[in-house]
Image (spheres, rainbow, N blue to C red):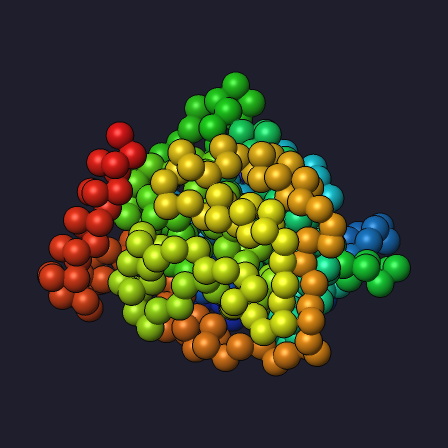
Length: 364
C-alpha cells in the first residue's frame, strides 16, 4: 500500500474523468485511458513504472473523496479486496491516497486489468449456453464462498458486480467486484466493525435484494445467498425472477411471490429438479430456510447431477422486459422506503408492512 499524507484540501472546480489521462498517480501509475465512469468514481487503464503489467486504477471523483461515508466505503472495498485472494475475486495490486489537481486528496485502488465486461453487459450481448451460464454462476458462488469463509459479507451481489474475463485460452472466468458495501464479521481478523450507515438503511439494488434487506432488516451471509440465487437465475434465463415497473412492486414480489421455475422462464431451457431445488432454497423468503452461507450453496450446486441444465431450442434473443425493468427499478443502493411510500400510496405500504410482520411472526 502506498499513499500521500498531509494533503491540504482546496476548493476548485470538479475534475472531469477524461482530464486525468496522462496524469501520474502517486509517482507509480500513469493513466493511459478511461475504461469507464460511474456516479462516484472512474476506472482507468494505467501503466506501472518499471515495465510491470498494465493495471486498472479506480479513483473516487474528487467531490466524493471529501465525503466521509464515500471514503469509508472505498476503504472497505480496498481492505476486503486486499485481504481476499481468490481466482473468482478481482485481484488488488495496491491502494492509498494521492494528490491530483491542486493537491486534492483522492483515494485510489489498483486492480488487475482484465479483458472482458460485467456480467450484465455480457448477458445483454448474448445469452450463453446453459452449461457456460451455470459454470459462470458456480464461479460466482465459489468466490462468495471464500469471502464468507474469511468473515466478509458483500451485501451488493448482482450481475453488474461480476466481471466476466476472457482468458488467453478462450475460456471465461467470473470475478466478483465492488466490495464497497462489504461488512466484516470477523473482528479478530478485520478489527472492530465500523458503522457505515444508520440502522434501518437499505443497501443494495432492489432487483437483487432479499426480503429482509429490502425492508431495512439485519443482513447476514444468507442475504448474500439470496442475491446470488438471483444472479444464478439471471445467468440461465437472461432475465430477473421478479419484474416490476416500480420499486414498491419489486419489493412486494421479493416478499410474497414464489420463486419462478427456470424451465418456464426461458424457452427451450431444461433443468434438473435438483438445480431448481438449489435455486428455491437460495431464494427462500425466510433466511433460516436458505443455505447458511455460500459454501453450503456451492456444495449443493456441485451435488447436482450433470448435465444440470441444457437447451432444447436454438439460441433466442435476450428478453426485453428485463432491460426495461432495469431502467425503471435499479437503484444506487440508497434508502428508498420513504420514496416507495410516496409513489405507491399509504395503502400499498400498509400491505407490505403486514406481509413482513406476518412473515417474521410465522418464522418464530
